[in-house]
Image 1 (cartoon, rainbow, N blue to C red):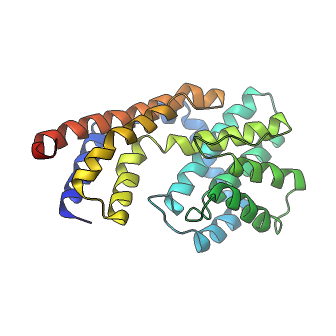
Image 2 (cartoon, one colour; image 1 turned 90 degrees about the vertical axis):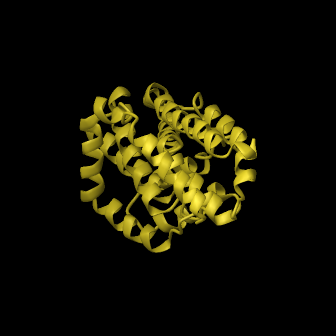
Image 3 (cartoon, rainbow, N blue to C red; image 1 turned 30 degrees about the vertical axis):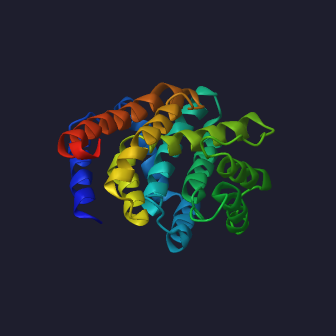
Length: 252
């Protein structure tokens, strides 16, 4: 990575460190802890994690680390939403398992064109080896199929399937906040060798796309807590832009 971008990445991380942690993690610490314990202890999720670790490729910060973060948040959101929907406890736990399976698999072929469509196909192949019901596998695959932003979703027949898709979407879009300026932006500019001047020209469009995510969350939990994730990302983006303007005035 170019030294300028190394410096800007460090500045972005410094700004991020000065901002608060999203309140989702404090308001729902018990659900977050439950999801982590489930992730570590469920045999289906553990086996799937090993499979994904051997197959997934990092793509602009969308590798195993990203997938695990999405998985943990998806499990927590599903626990909260399952309780809100008054699911029986055993059924809620099964849906947490499916949310975590979807989180692990959602970017399994991130580098391929139409990665959500292709990812759903790969997920069906992988999950066919597990002791999951056909309708459970279908729900996971449809959630993966519908997890992209700015794409028209495919209709899902059941409210339970819709909730699983909403859970995955929201957990994935939580990452568009702080993670965007911690990893993703810098992985992209490094991979594409983008000159600083071009980066600055594209910056406003990137911020607009980020802001459009703010009102796109689906579940009640996502609608309540997702906007703050995006606001933190936007705060980092705005402060970083001011810093860039002060350091590289000749490019404006």
